[in-house]
Length: 491
Ligand SMILES: NC(=O)C1=CN([C@@H]2O[C@H](COP(=O)(O)OP(=O)(O)OC[C@H]3O[C@@H](n4cnc5c(N)ncnc54)[C@H](O)[C@@H]3O)[C@@H](O)[C@H]2O)C=CC1
Ligand SMILES: C[N+](C)(C)CC(=O)CC(=O)[O-]
Image (cartoon, rainbow, N blue to C red; front, side, top):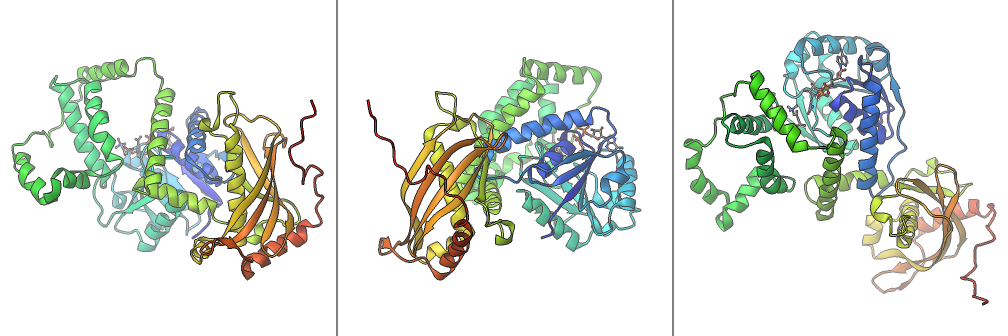
């Protein structure tokens, strides 16, 4: 997969800003072009929300945030860009003129994707000099949290471009859904529009308020939609007889019909005012930023539950975390220093009644650092499957300084000793902002034959990796606090 070093985002509103955040939080530099004078301020707010959400969502290190630059024009944004996401207002002629400029100045092999909610890619790519690299990459709000992105090519889009775009989106923790056929509004917006039209009719006909309609979803079908789509939900609703029974029981009502699907209520001034007033009442004192944070906290919780279930969007999150966790190539680590194996932000649920990170979370972070070392030296799932692993025999943890929610900390690892079965480690946790040492831990680990349940020699591969590190680390100074136990009380 091509690795991205610079991405251009054209248009930095709700969706463009969300894309900016997703790329930056994946460690990729972003050049943004948006003519609005307050574009940077708006995007900064979105990035703050995204960082807050990722710190709660991810159980593994995420890459260091990329750099954001504001470009003076489209040309400077897209020159040298490896990937371009257009997110300008939904207007065919405006998008066409923007795409023509992007196409003129971007490197010819660079993919150009449009966030359009429903314009056909065939219409958008007309007149481009390299239309084969253009397609729709339709995301969902908030772009930094929702994994789905619909890829829809036009008549001139190449299959290779679509698969390259799918790989790129996947590497950002997204779920690309590549459409086999080009249609207006793709798959998801056709479904959402049908629901939205019906909801507007319910208000227009005086049947329900906007709040009642939202309640009808969020207390019911909305809860199950995160787990399963309509087909699977209705399969279950058919009982043991499944979908066949469901269709024969509820099929006839489709012809009555209950809904007003193809009619559109007139969006005249009075109706718009009515909806806006009811929506204001529904939100009460909550600002858009507060509503976004409530939405994000809920989404993070749902995604984490789905990850535990290894189901749906949670599988995408699990794969993304595994990718982020994957060992860095040996060439990237300087063995002459303690190894920088782990970095994280302190999450809200790690804070205890004293207002700082609770004690067992220190062990969790040190344990994750040990896992990172083991992954680095080659202990992967295939190795574990052979019935060999590494167990911890002893830990001595020193809590030196408090650390608060949201702080970013790093852990480095120094080898203090090695024999054929055991390795002795020192992990040091520091606060990124000032490099203050927060905690240290020494651990003795032993290689184990898990079937026999006893110590065994490291395999040749693991032993070679460990010896390489140990040879380099023998030149490091050994801190004088190592090797000590808990001091006796003298009083
Ligand atoms: N809002 C939503 O829920 C979703 C929107 N989309 C699509 O994303 C695109 C953007 O929509 P939103 O972000 O919602 O709109 P928005 O109105 O929030 O943002 C549009 C941004 O484009 C900027 N802009 C205006 N003229 C420009 C130009 N000539 N060059 C570059 N930027 C320009 C504006 O200053 C603004 O910041 C649309 O195509 C829309 O259909 C896709 C998925 C969901
Ligand atoms: C309303 N909308 C058509 C712009 C919605 C989308 O395109 C996707 C979403 O986030 O719901």
